Image (cartoon, rainbow, N blue to C red; front, side, top):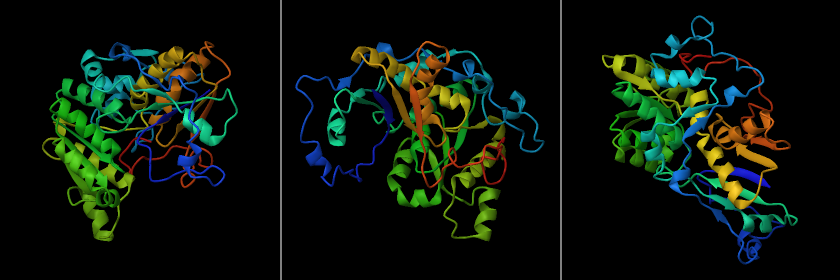
Length: 356
């Protein structure tokens, strides 16, 4: 049994099997009466997030201060995040309760369906007994799994008295998710989107602005970082590193800095923890299907997608409650940071403002 997580599939590309169009390969349908979708009720939305830091054999290396290269303490994160999220970032508790206000919003689209990909199995020509299930996260209001962490991040900021949140976005999934979450809690959101994506994806901008958020193409003239880059290269298409630098500068400068915070859609431990609602739901849905996974697959960039589906199952294996599962992270060959990269500390942004 193979378990994977899918969000916003790109239907513009059609795989082929032995040169056959996909539609022809799918013509042989699954056996009559076979259950394809495993859907549980809103009461099954998890009440706690799973924190894999509790079960890791060794602690994670600490983030380093960008100026002093020493391990960061909670006070170093305070200009960017509310204390509740800082506490989650460093927590080693196995389960962290999900506030009821957050669960109420999540239940608008959660639990998401677990689907048996029976036609895909046929198209691939898999032997009998090999089953593929996928957890479909495209049902969220913003269309991706990013909303799973956007909602709690905005909630905790609202509780802490934050009056505005700044962020970056690349293709626009995270900016869309945070903007929608901001709308739920009446929180102003300011988004810096990589300029080339801003120009290529006008409907992301339309969605973000419909949610009441403000969006700028990055590099922009709104920050010193952006102005400096544009002075050197007026045609700069932007990058995620530049957009992060602008969002952090916008958070930490100006008269509203004391009541402005920053939000990140991947990488950080609390972000990955928020995504574990995916895997926790999948565990219960697989019980309904009468299955347990042998292979767990997810794409891996910043880690939120892969951690969401894999961490709860990996935790069971680390605790000795399960065995034999194989976990496969799929990364882009254009940027193979896990399989070919160097394991080392680095900045997360162009202007070197972030912790390492």
